[in-house]
Length: 57
Image 1 (cartoon, rainbow, N blue to C red):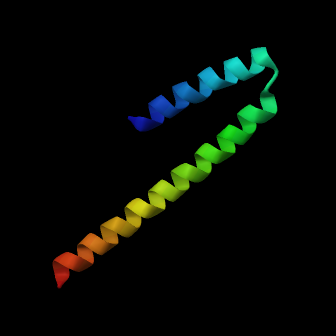
Image 2 (image 1 turned 90 degrees about the horizontal axis):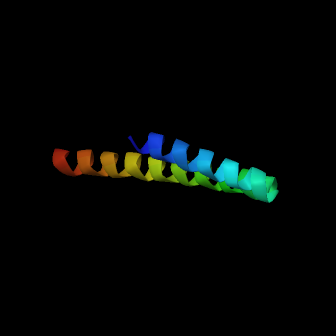
């Protein structure tokens, strides 16, 4: 469900960037959002592993 909101947000930013001429800013925001999504996914995986290890001991 979050991916739908991120997609809509990206489309809105793309349209706004096109009309204001801020294409480079849009690309950089995209790179930052992808990096943050990767960090978030990694942290969720680490939390999952820590919870599994806590339940085993």
